[in-house]
Image 1 (tube, rainbow, N blue to C red):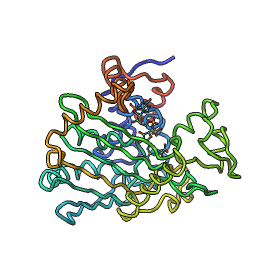
Image 2: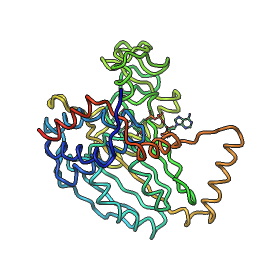
Image 3: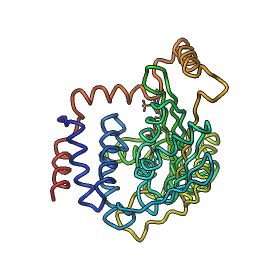
Length: 335
Ligand code: NDP
Ligand code: PYC
């Protein structure tokens, strides 16, 4: 049985909870909006499910909820940030206006963020840029849980990549996906619910294929999506997310001295492109031509459609939530 909670009320409760666990007011609100937004849009693996991991990282001192990050203007089209062991969200929020100004001026702009914890879905980072008319790309590395192609132990993170492009008078087209066959969060949810994984998702601690989520989590590993092609994308996320930004590779992240920690202390790179400055001066019309061709060929659902439909439904009627979970959030917010 689930009940429903208003988005604003959920944000309010989560912000209070994050403040009580060491975040500044600003960081607490950003985390709360991100988490409530993921829950609202039906991204279960990156919504309320992430409370324990975020609080574990804060309570153990693995992440700094009041970090004093820096942002340097290093080139006409480039900003370089150091998260100073805080969350990525406040860095991105602070860099937003300067990044947009650079993209408007140069046609393209890039932001690197090092030593910052990204523990959420990627689409909330990029969708706002597409609403402002930009094509936006996000490249993120996380903690090691994926074996490279043909390999026997984990090196890559589940390393998500996000892409958003504007549409005239419509919600932006956004896709946002892990480069593993499944996000680690979804493996944890499958383990909790006792569901097997689809074949080809992961291997056990001996490197043998398994559909048991517990075997993947207990010393095993995930596989990249699509064999060597997905593995190349995961590798690219390490290069663009970590190496370019000056951050740790996923396999270098070690929180063993911080019991309960779960957030990856990795890197991210964001690229904004002003489509009006590209070769196509009718970019949004070309977007519609492509989408119409996809629909005509039989693709009914675009990436992002499910999320936008959930958003409309849950803003209108409230976000479904388990009453016990809500009681726990109220307790965490008030204690
Ligand atoms: P999914 O496989 O659920 O979805 C990937 C993309 O494909 C989405 O844009 C989705 O749109 C779209 N999609 C799904 N099904 C279809 C379909 N039938 N037809 C067309 N498009 C479809 O995502 P993942 O499991 O790979 O990732 C889940 C979340 O986990 C992501 O938000 C990701 O950012 C996050 N993540 C974060 C990490 C981090 O380090 N911070 C690491 C790994 C993952 P829609 O959203 O509308 O369903
Ligand atoms: O679900 O794979 C995942 C994940 C890793 C970091 C944040 N989410």
